[in-house]
Length: 337
Figure 1 (tube, rainbow, N blue to C red):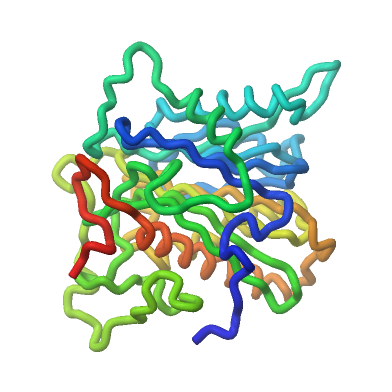
Figure 2 (tube, rainbow, N blue to C red):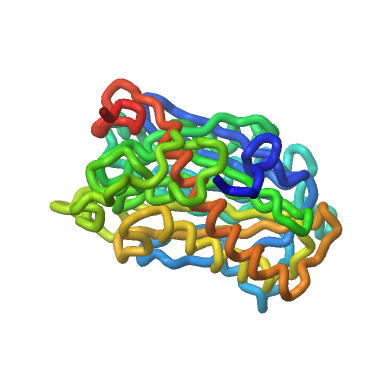
């Protein structure tokens, strides 16, 4: 059993100053998750999938001028879902939250999307997609206690053989800082070992947070067989796992980029395969600095390792927490025998 402990909520909001809001449309089988920063946060991003869909990510490069953001958006809807950032931006502007220049308030809201257009939902939305309004609602709903599973950006998510979902986890590190993850799991691959109910992320589990099954023994012979979603009609935009890794440590923009890179190891630990040409795998990093502690060089071993383990746990929790709904194309984890 791990000697590490999760934060009190075992959620992204264990990082003081971060709020999470979900908005879902059950008919559409899609939704939006907004991560709202109560104060502007240092931010970065790292993309490792071959088919990303993004907005305002270039400004997050360490060499570029803007240091902080006001919110991050994770959305379903493929390219249509990029409209969600406009809704979040409108909500924040109405509240006077954003970068002020010449009397104008401009919220900085990077976003990423996943593909959930082929999941049994009704996508006949008319002339304009509903994601701007869902984004506004998600920002309005931002709180410290939020639902996971089949909500927000995880509403219509799917993996190879199961419904995907929205997952979160947190870890208190030995140096007194906290790291946390939030992820919408919609991978081309699978989080399960072979045809079992066991999660690839099992070695990192804390307090039976996703079933407590551990690793199978013996390891099944089909453990590394590839189970691929939509193999017969795969397209470079038909999947994607999108996430946020956050800490209350004091980081520079370049260090936040390094944190996002490290957190991608959590994708590889929890999903087989990960980072394929048919995924748009992407992780945003946020650093609030609320702990007042800047990591020493030796601390980066722990910070990077637990960015990965926390992300792996969040992925498994998103699958574990998924709920069945009318018209689903795939079962949920809890229904497996």
